[in-house]
Image (cartoon, rainbow, N blue to C red; front, side, top):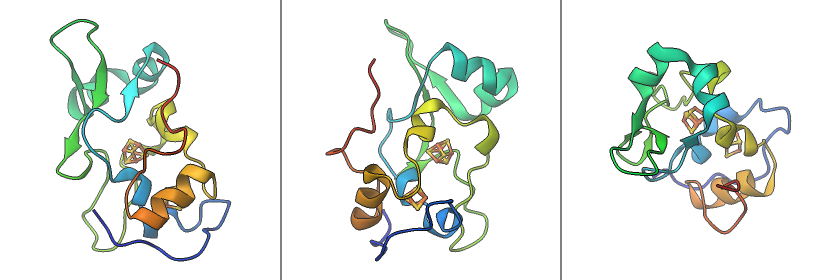
Length: 120
Ligand code: SF4
Ligand code: SF4
């Protein structure tokens, strides 16, 4: 995980690439529903997601260690999402300066005390 970031971010998301805290989380955090799968398409689904082999066969974004596998970490200190335009609805819930965002920045990773997870 990353160190906390102090202060509130730009509500328009201009601090997100330099932050990336909400994209640091454990496996089985970002799950996909049918609309997410349709948006991503076959190629991105194969690259970035895993379908569970047991009922209820949920599909999740793959993890890479302590972070989301969709995070592009090719540039040190920069955390763009490699699939930003196609990212699942779970990710869109965490808007810049929202309570879940502020919690992630204070923890250095996505927290669990605020309503990140949608109804399943
Ligand atoms: S924690 Fe907030 S500022 Fe940081 S990347 Fe996520 S939404 Fe953006
Ligand atoms: S898919 Fe993109 S926005 Fe969602 S957690 Fe992963 S890197 Fe972050």
